Amino acid sequence: MSEKKKLSKSIYKKELSRLKVELVRMQHWVKAKGLKIVVVFEGRDAAGKGGTIKRITAPMNPRICRVVALDKPNDRERTQWYFQRYVSQLPAAGEIVLFDRSWYNRAGVERVMGFCTDEEYYEFLRSCPMFERLLVYGGIKLIKYWFSVSAEEQARRFEARLEDPTKRWKLSAVDLKAQARWEEYSRAKDQMFLYTDIEQAPWWVVKSDDKRRARLNCISHLLSQVPYEELPPRDLTLPPKQPDIGYVRPPESQQNFVPERF
Image 1: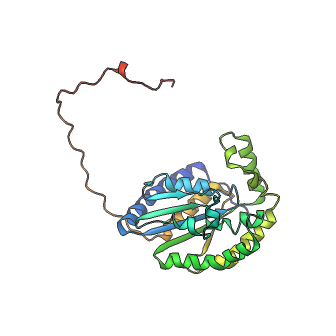
Image 2: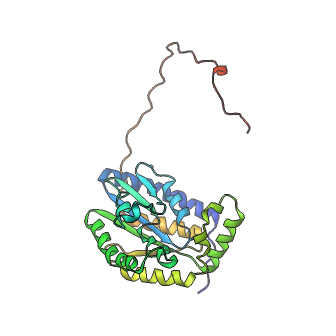
Image 3: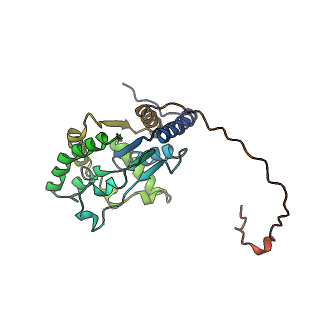
């Protein structure tokens, strides 16, 4: 089978604009019906998770849809039940939470880089399906995406980040070791799927060598996972301007203005 051509920018922008409208409609439905949505984004470094999350949140109300990207646990959090700090981030009714990496850190980077013990790792594989079933039985819609990128494309993106001063912050020492341990990460991912690809919350794989296609495919699929209807817009009318009541604006000399350099 021949490889698909990269999606053109014009088609991408047109489809993304259409999907953004649908995301807003879905957001209104989630709020009105008191739904609780959790979306997990996982995958190798530079697989395109962050870019997709940005496109999802761009048109949405941050009070309804928020992103959770937790740093490594502090000393106190390391003594807690592993899932505890994630539980505190779960949505209330009418909210959508997007996890930019999640509790699956234990099954991926922590396992490969030796940041957890074998006992902690196998306990995660045992307890994670039970934890996720509890979320679903508790009324949370849990959607899990794995962004799949090839070794060649990942290397190309790493090189681009090294050359771009606005993207170098995305690379860490751990990220740079990812290529050297490609097979170990593959084995860890396969093991993770074996234990956690459950009926109540299956994994959905997003092919992400083509970023544009990956974003559109993921957003389109996300919309299909949350059945919604378009709600009639509220009837809003701008009131007339307040009549002049003698207000006098202070002189500009008494205010500090940002220099107009452009």
